[in-house]
Length: 425
Image (cartoon, rainbow, N blue to C red):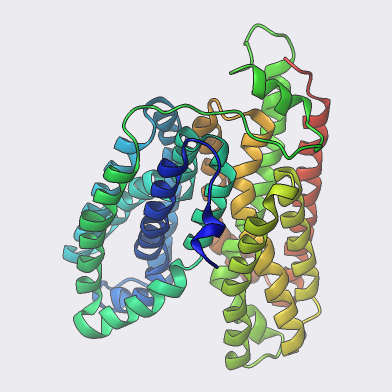
């Protein structure tokens, strides 16, 4: 793929390219250091600090709760300021978090490090990046968002082996020390140089020629925000946002469960550990494939259709998982469906709210969605483990996940029906 494929229309071409190039790097570092690294470093940290596996990941769950609690405030700040100061502060806090973790003499300071990390992630992961792109990229927003998620999909691919090398060479404390330097000397200057100063201006979302436009989209293109005095508008839009949030939160709940429990679940069906790892390895490339497909075909497809495809693929993946029964081929089919659906879901979380509600106030709106998404992310591993502890078993638990996925589709469908019925204002 040549650089021509990354050409953007319009006058914000230079700003958009600069933001995409910067976020392609900073998202990999932010996700890799503060989210994915614990999978590699966790056993060594637990052994030194005397933390059980449940205690270790329980602290990470608390971090995600901090992230979710902070997300709406961060979104509103980006709406008001444009994102530069917020994301730079996120980089500084990321460095402070990693340095605190590297120097932690006991569990309490270790917990403090992850609490700081939660605030940093609220200011530096996808949602604040999406909100910042929304303020500064104009009509290029959708293409820019897809490209950033396409790069971010390589975070685990880059950081799992990097973290392993660092741990083997300088230990887990040294690895966090290196991560602190990456936040301070790579992410911070990139955010400062790439994000324009000032609040920017959110433009109305572009719509492919000839595509149907929902009343909510039409309204957002002509009116900055719904007047509070118009009766019926606010309750309907809140209900729409609630159903959309439920759908996204369910998808993330399932995704978080798969991240922590997939290998054990596959082995419980009779699959060997080696085969289970092979299945898991398919998911990452398929996430990237799904995002690449959206990048290449996005101009012909409405954002709402991307979201619909993501939730339907998730149902298909869970259905395929019920049929694995030790079969590697069925496992790979699951991984392909799940990977593509999960990859598209990340894009949908950024694009669908803009398409349905307009891009004025987008940061606050996506922050409210992110709150419940990360609460679901934090709760999923422990909730699923509790389900297994109740004697449900891995096989029957997949049926529970399938039922959740179906409800996610119904919630998304309900949101789309509400969007069509929303009066123009």
